[in-house]
Amino acid sequence: MADENLRKSLVDAAFKKSSSEEEQKVKEEDKATEGDLITFQKDGQQVEAVVTSSKLQNSVVCDMTIMDDFHERNLDFEKTVVAHINYSIKERRDG
Image 1 (cartoon, rainbow, N blue to C red):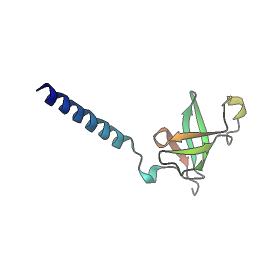
Image 2 (cartoon, rainbow, N blue to C red):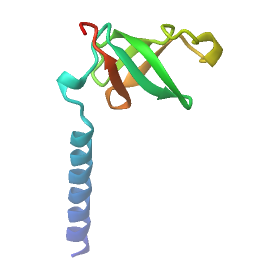
Image 3 (cartoon, rainbow, N blue to C red):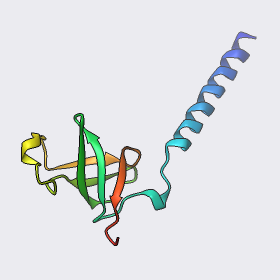
Image 4 (cartoon, one colour):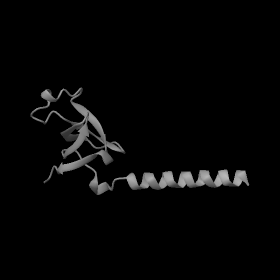
């Protein structure tokens, strides 16, 4: 009986994890592409950046130097990688 309960618990946990991962997936049309302007939080700051590569499966590479005050913000790098679930699209390249 204990083995049956353990097996059921493991199956339930796996199902919950799978459901959680499905909820976090971003629809293709909501993903940024190269040239799009995005906003996100980095080191407690609201940051704007332009997407330079969208070929990664779960994230984009972006350039933060487009901000006028980039150097005053003391960010460690000019580019960073941001997961699809962690940014908002501010402006599409075509729009």
